[in-house]
Image (tube, rainbow, N blue to C red; front, side, top):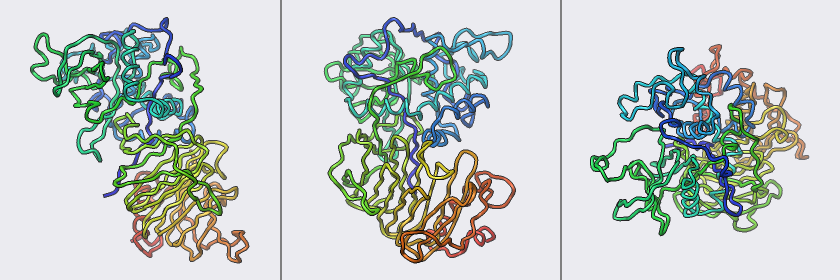
Length: 553
């Protein structure tokens, strides 16, 4: 079975950890109230719809503030609705600062809302009745917009820094410190719903107060209760949890001797591998790139943290720093990194293993003790580099644009996504797929050089915001230059005389590419994307038909 696509969704983490870890001045602390700042709308399809709907003006605003590398993550937070808890939590906190004009979200002129809990219907404590809430399109779009803010560098860099530099105990201590002051905190956590390989999920809530308690769970005592607003709505509490004098199960409980914690309703506990992954209380950060007015631009002096993320590594591995010489990466020493399997807190994430490092000018080699199916993303400061292979024991990436894979006659894919000023030609997203024992892709001033022991049935896709170009070719050469003939056409050239200049253009005909209409039906849709993937799999398995012949078949 193919591994799931790892999303690029990395959520906010706003702890400014210098000295006392201050995140906001006490004079700016709002008075967050459950009956005012908790949405009546719930984090369910019945309220939010089947997809992540955005109003046109909101989508235009969002796309205007995103870098190319951020757009890459944005595309993977689209499609079928899988939850928008972070958007709910972030807008809830923003509303407590008076930044959301609730009256603009009225369903009609009869009832003008003055607080989030009035939008749609007043907040209802019974889950079944809460399903009757009507969610205005403008409110749904607002929530979905801020859900997507997780993929911006501002948010994910602070998250990366906090996960890199501080322990779980320190994050719990900070959450207690903030909520004891009455500071509302967008709190994200990762936990396991089943087997570790495939049962990981995440959630975001608002923590807003602390109470003393005397609570027992799984034979452990907890003495502090952190009060939560959960966008999922009223939870089904066990019968005992409804009795007078007993605690609710939908709150975070903390043991202040070792700062372990538990959220019983999700069976999430630091004792069983759950982790607090994001605490965001800075209103300027929450609204950075947002559509609401009233905050200042957010800045941070924390260093950039590079992130390599992979699917679950089944056996032992070593991560090396590396250097490039003659298009070969060689190890120079063990990488300085922190490994964590609980970095992405959003519920759409499927990443398992993450390596966080400050050494973002270095190349890296990931070596596995045994071959396995692997998809690796490396998030550099101005690029994302993806290497995927059905069976590989070694992948390598470099910040200047070099990726490498070693396996055993395996299907592979290289993809490079670049921010403005860092890519070659017209396309910022460049992808190459094939089947080989070894392969590498190098970005140059003239295009991309692909080297491999098998350059048969190579599929190439290049795109920007407006155009996608596609090419399928084969050659007996061991390297090829993939370059731009024009904005809609990819050219493949080989070096026939061995002088290092790729002067001979292959006679391959590019497939229809101007608008991505691969099947010639006059429209561009998911069928075209599926057709490309189907043919790539067919060609990678040894199929000999041309793309045109395959389509006709």
